[in-house]
Image 1 (cartoon, helix red, strand yellow):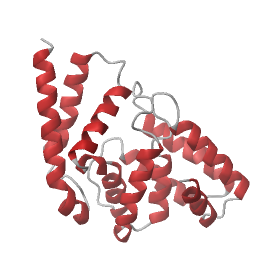
Image 2 (cartoon, rainbow, N blue to C red):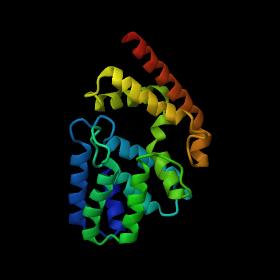
Image 3 (tube, rainbow, N blue to C red):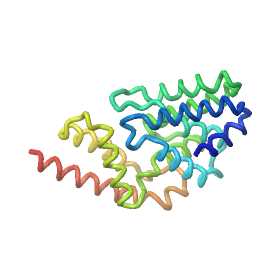
Image 4 (cartoon, one colour):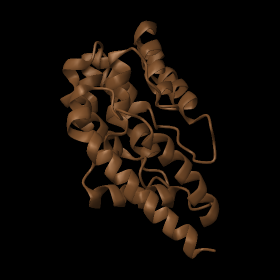
Length: 211
């Protein structure tokens, strides 16, 4: 992952020392306590999927930067993580000469992950599909993901978590198609609905048992 970041930084013309510092800052942020899912493993997975969708993107550099920074600020108790992550990216990159136009694109892409709503922009499609690619993972991997999300919300009582998580999954379940790019729709939509349905059934069971 370090080589991956440094390669992108070099392409942007960032000085090696500055790029190294940002790398260590990213490692510290994504490795903080409580990061059971929103960590560098998630970033790697999103980057891998984005690379598979690169032909769809208009500005793949912006997509890559947005993925690297989109969860750098993450506190499940807050509602402004995306805005703070975008601001963090700007603080780190603008002094190093990254153009304002590129930073504006990165900000737009990061903010799009707050609602995951449709937009008529291919870069947004790639960003959102990469971010939620885990939802179409094989059942065992998806179940591990669901467990790590619960761990990140360990401060929430079980009954409240079940209600909140159920609402989120039901919102996702009514999307059709789920993904925005044709490639992800073809290979992932069916798996998403199966995974969501399975987790919803598990949540319903937990809710019933908790009464």
